[in-house]
Figure 1 (cartoon, helix red, strand yellow):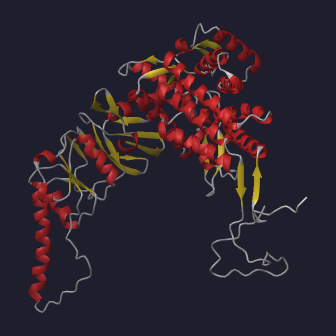
Figure 2 (cartoon, helix red, strand yellow; figure 1 turned 180 degrees about the horizontal axis):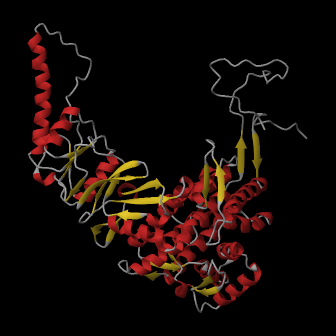
Figure 3 (cartoon, one colour; figure 1 turned 90 degrees about the vertical axis):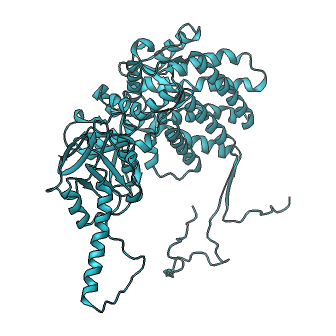
Length: 557
């Protein structure tokens, strides 16, 4: 026997074959187990301490995994899953992970039996196609304008969250906000931009019940001169500017040497006249409210307040955009270019109110606002953060419905239906792929099983009952009512899920499972190049030079 040839360096660690598969599956299952208990209405909360010592209390799958710091590469890619899910459809972040973990779990037996991973992947992809076909079959169209349907839909999304106990409150907020900012693009397409045009303002204090969607915008600013300017204007004419109302300073430092005393006065006069001209150009349009993103000098402030105009300065760009959308104004870059059409007249009321210990300006009662602010009140910071996360999820669900108005049953009914359909189909699948295909069908049951576990039911009995109900395919809508744990028809209990979310969940989960199964080799090495023989010697203390102070040695495991 020849001496073995060393191809890889000593320091590189290489794992290959089934060992890797097992490690990956273990890691994926570990991640799934972390957030398994946060699925469903009876879900637990997780409390995470982040690096800064702040606390996050949440049961939003994505928010939990975002805070975790993982070492295992496979586990990291699981976390990516829930992030994509959150960005794409906003809900179902927990289900994705649980489903992917389950898919890998059922694949483990096949790996033990020396199935080739690609065979398993092929079977899974087939199962995915059939699953989506089943979804299309049982999906039920919904009327977007029917508010009660929307409400029950959004409620089933939030029912699993912490704010579920506040009933319709958050659901109402979410629906109001999303229907406000929806823009029809024609051809029955709706564009709903949650990120840009819905601002969530969290103000600690008060009760959650005080939260509301404003028909307009609210900004955390007061008028420039509170004593002199009006703080309540009905039907204001609003001008939005993007330029400073103050004397322009030179680009670089300029020194002017003045010989005569009078020249100095002329200079000051010029500055004053410049500002006066700016203000006159604006006042021509008889505005009631001038808002600028940049500075506003004392003098300009004086001219404006003399004309009875309120002014707000140094506003965020995004807020300015929202105000423009809400009251129909156009943001103008130079006062010279103002036109009558740029003045926003859509708002019904401008008012400065004190909430807590800060002043907020409200521009509300807009005629047809395309932007809005959701004002959240609540007892503590943590509570508000959690409510905000739930609101984001709820708004995403509402957005998905507006974009693709199709419903599926919630409560694990969809998964069970898919699972039953796949089981029946598996008998017609040829060859080796039959077994993994069947396993994929079983894996879909992870969701209803987890729901049952979280309700504290007798899992085996419940699952058998449900499978029996679904096996003959008579009623696709039977599932678990997550809060009471009864087996009921989802149509009656109004537990819905949106089609987008479910389809995306299945696709993401199965594709990720396939990807992780295909990995058969992990090579991990030590990055730092060391001179041969210059290994870390323990006896003498090492002194770091400036050069390597920042890239610390990555210690070999």
